[in-house]
Amino acid sequence: MKDKQIEKLLTAEKRRQQKVVNLIASENFVSSDVLKVLGSELTNKYAEGYPGARYYGGNEVVDQIESLCQARALKAFKLKSPKWRVNVQPLSGSPANVAVYLALVPPGGTASQGPASAKATVGRGKIMGMSLAHGGHLTHGHKVSITGKVWQQVPFGVDEKTEVLDYEHLSRLAKKEKPQLIVAGFTAYPRRINWQKFRAIADSVGAILMVDMSHVAGLVAGGAYPSPFPYADVVTTTVHKTLRGPRAALIFSRLEYADKIDKAVFPGTQGGPHLNQIAAVAVALAEATRPEFKTYAKQVVRNAKALASELKRLGWRLVSGGTDSHLILLDTWMGGQGLSGKEASDRLEAAGIIVNKNTVPGETRSPMDPSGIRLGTAAETTRGKKEADMVKLAQRIDKILKK
Image (cartoon, rainbow, N blue to C red; front, side, top):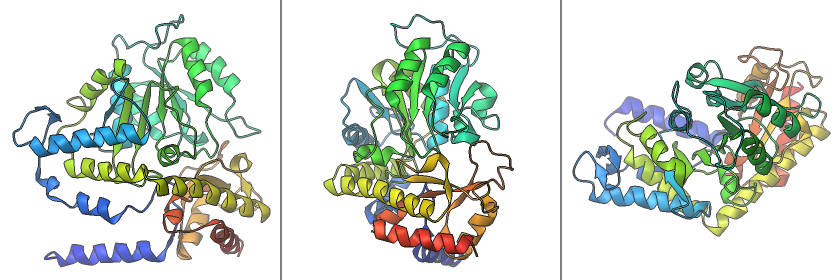
């Protein structure tokens, strides 16, 4: 490589990744095939538009690549066309979510309606999503995100005592606020979501049900977490978490919403797609349909449960008491240790364990120095770790944080 400065930094980052224990819940390690495609000649191609309808010439190969990626995405989640369509062009999760809102809850305009059977009148411009402090994502309508500036968020959270979702409360809230679109999904909620109950709530107010399954997509593909597809109208996901692909996103939608969503992605919010990224997504999706990926997904959950169980045995307070997925929220402040999330994260990183500081339900501290940390087992499971390794890791974490 001629650029020695970048080469040196790339080498340093590779070494850093190799020597640390990665418990970042939103990270993973991709295959060598995914890396190879990301660095391919596809980087050179500009292809505004969609297969068969581009604005540039020379697309005979990239049209096949994008179409193949779409077919593999449907296959990975056992979906059939034309009932479902998938847009594989979103550059990441945030613009994918914005595109859905733009398509289905247009600011100041007449909105797309939910199920035809719904009798209630929906509100205009309202998105009902999980609050950031309780485990939601910025793009579920938080005020600092464009999604909270353009659309009105109807925030919901977990029950104060159980720290799990109270669906009866969500139903009452939806009927009071009449959101146009309900987002079911999370970035820091360790328990399973009952997609069927969200469907019933959406139907009761005539709302569109969108699921953001970014964190659990790989678990869904691997049969280790319930699928939202029987119940959702739209499903968005990133690819780089449990699905173990490149940094990218997908938007699945039922046919009646697909054209509007496609237009919201291009030309609504993006220009030319990143074909190297799309091809790498196709590789990852093919990997996710193999039998060994199912074994992997189930091991991710077993590892998380083992890590959570040992941490709990050692006296740590876990938000909601445990986990049903790859994700654990550890309360380091109110759990009796009096350790802020930032300090806990810094201590662990100094010892070679990478986590992220995170808010907990009922947070009283600053988001920049919150009361907890978030742990995830997807990346270390890729490296081959099993339950016994998680028990030892929990003991190591306990020792580091209690020193």
